[in-house]
Image (cartoon, rainbow, N blue to C red; front, side, top):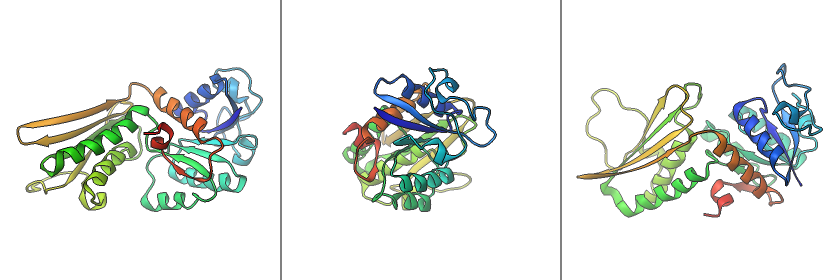
Length: 266
């Protein structure tokens, strides 16, 4: 039985993931964390997400919350994720991390734990998006330098980081295929008299509006034609399903940093 715990069980993603764990025949909801003062503190985690009693209570103390969990699922925010990684390392627990918005320095810090903790870290747990990462990389190679590439992402008004981790992941796929540094080629906004588009530029544009779950479009624009690849998330359930698949996959793995590409075997 895979014993998993969820950070932010009262949030939208946390609740979906916890329900998925509770419903899975091979999993046990064995830990739940929320911020101090949250209305769910002290409640049985299973009952808190509308499922059967599971025997663990929602806590605001990570050590207490995940005492009986083997794997911790984290879709929180960068600072909290790094703090949780320290605790996971000290207690030899695996992690599944869907947190976005980490700076380069924070990603470097996270990767410092590859020798002590097995963890899946992915900007997007969706199966479709991870296939899209690979397709974008291959299409970039096939089309060559004659096509301009632009990435447009749209999310709900409450999303705190921009551009999305998924958009950056798509841009990295382009940069990897072109064997260039994304830092040198990325253009995140345009305004005023900007002149001609530099050859090889990778455009990444952001929309924030309403309750958009997540849209990502990659444009390959050449002379006389263009190709558009688009992924739309209709609900957060596909992210939760991906996180649960990653939790199954990481169970028993050796310490190291893994991605959803590893989970899916593509």
